[in-house]
Length: 318
Length: 319
Image (cartoon, chains in turn green, orange):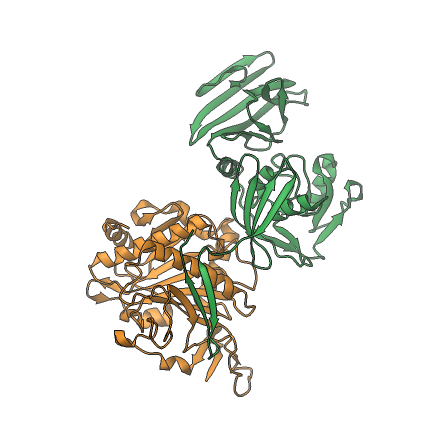
């Protein structure tokens, strides 16, 4: 692992390069390391971190293997790209601004042999670093929201509405977004990078992968709008926490999650109060759904002559 | 006579039920109605059982109300369910004495009863509890608890919901999650993998203990299988500690607080929890729910919570 082209070691470092200066700190945290950097001056592309590809999967703002997660902690003013070349993965900071910069940001390295815990620990750090609060399920009524089919239909004169744009925020003019924000509108849209859109969007139209949605579940308003097939419908349905008032379905409650190397298992209670086990294989695009009992012991209900029901339980718990 | 009457002074419903007067009080062991061979099980035995109370205060098919409602004197039919939950067929056992496996089965039964009762549209709250000992009005010594499936949200639970909503709005997180994060060692009685038990900073009773799941979940339906086993374990530990504290069968009220059903979704703000409210303030002394406590809901706790926690923590038990 290389950090700014040097060996990865704990401590604080300053390095002067041609036209810019880098300060970085490597700090030990529980289960890993936090890396902070500050860069002054001009550069066009700068490699922050380089690792061997190993079994890492690449996501827009983090990489994940079965026992390690390396991820950015907050939106960056300049774009950080995660690039795979040959047998190496690099986090590259690209600057499009030719004036003198002063950029600071952080990333985290977490080392735990459990995919779910890696994502949860990462989520905790994102919360801490960005001082964000969790959100609860909301319902929005027809009078409160405006639904746009695409970016060209945006009316910037709207006020105090929930504006749902069925397009990527990255493709919408910043000017239009700022106008809508000034008029106290809440903006929901698709995004290519949940972390980068943290401050711009009030809510996301669910996109991306299960991992990204698992991290942002309860951190942002997540709205289900686009489902191309049954597979998409099921996994996206799990994460939504925004519902339209006329939606007859309650939000299903996830009660247990297990993440394995090749699949996820979600246990949830559906709107008919049934306990469902959903196994999702992301690579195979397959879903297995099974109704499971609430209890592990035997039960026998008897109606007595006086109309009372007696529920007998017993046997061995599993 | 069985009906719900509205109190406009406190905005709460009172359950009027003449049938409950007929409940047997402390019968002899040979007369125990819930032992195998007793009046409820004349020709059956059982492992665990939950059944509708012979002397209920709420019913699935309550009698029609008599007379007319008016603006001031409002009444409603007593929809609801009152169940007796018998933990074991062993009359002389008790919650702390029961094998852990039996308590694990009991937890499963509580989950299933919550699930079954929440299916009734009229049920707004499923309240699971145990009154242990004469000091808190237990009418039978045979190990058992009860469940009230209320058709309304009882006043104290409403107060909790209002406070939890307010905290969430002001702090952006569940109040119980916040308490767990900030709880200090001096009040913790015991911690397991998934639960924490402590004498709360705000304890009202001298040896009050609260049990909170570490993970945010709002009802028992959300317990994973591992959490159920762990829940059985921590309840056994706490009740064993209670019995060993003064070397006597320690009376208590054990109450489970779950988020409401069939109404607004409170799952984000409501954190499932258990309260043990024991009435003892010393080996031979009772902390009574007297005028101040009953009339005003203001409590005077004569034992410093941190000291009570230390005493309970130092009681060693093996399960």
